[in-house]
Image 1 (tube, rainbow, N blue to C red):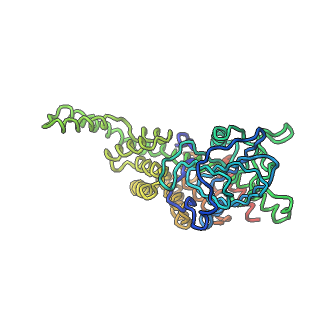
Image 2 (tube, helix red, strand yellow):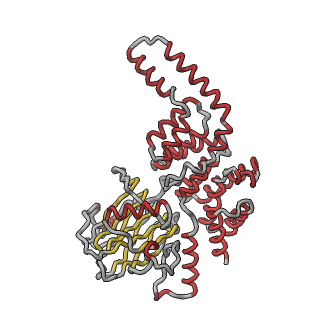
Image 3 (cartoon, one colour):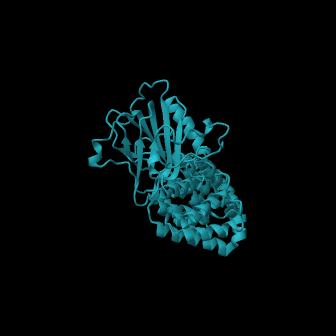
Length: 451
């Protein structure tokens, strides 16, 4: 299950997901300062620059979804791009002399923006709009430059603006940024003396802010960038538990194939009493002829064909209501369609069938995380991790890649600021797999926070 999920999220998970609090609706006191949406890109000068800020979510998203952006006068026209997987409220502080020609908001979930002068157009490119308007397939978000999401972001920003990105500042959890034309220079435009894979600056310091405490904060924020190579990657690892699930259900699948052929034979030879019945039978036969609908569902899910994935998974559970991997697939599909309740029900069914289903436990835990129910999420993920360890042992569980809940557990502990707990679980994991980059980043983050 570790390979097919390199779809996204974004993307995943996440991941998503989730019927959690979004910032897509403007309050009454925000309407006056909100500019018109989806405006045409204005004429730009030849030296116009593009400045991008990318996040996964607000730094303390369970309690505050605001992110603050200060835009200084760079002496040039600029297009500002603000993107994030989860929706946030972008709070702008734009110098009067700054030549901002357009602001673009993009992400999977809806975003809002305040304190923008009326003469600056704002364009939204949202994959799952809160107002249920037509989703836009060209949405993007990234908080790392050298990732699949980062490369997609670069391509789509250029398609929108006709220009390359001049500066990029990224952070997993964002709170404050400054755009001055210098911070976060494009990593692909650095000189030979600079480190080619240097990560973009996260919430960088201004000259007036230099102090010991702020310097420490900068180091911590930098660690966030090294923190997670996307929630999507962890979802990929989680879903690759299907390797174990398929082995567990091998006998069941074998008998299912025999049953399918028996049903097809019976339907073909059965005499129908009316044309309507005959048509229905032929339609049923087509579904019955589909081999391995669960596998086909996951392949459709991987290509983000949500409707086809859902159809395949439903065929699978109709044949076998105890098909845990298919219920898990239904859950993740609903999650990416932002149908949280349906996703939650499907995950719960998968767990009722197989409580050790790491993918379903991870999905349920992440729904609770996105809803801000961190205690409940920790409880679910701890249970999933402990059950996996009880059944396989730590070393074998890690060797088999059955670690989705384990990764989720470390992440939720970091979100709860339980750095000692996060460190304990990260060290237990790294004892068996010391070269795991994601868990190593989390351990480093926990250590920094505990100093």
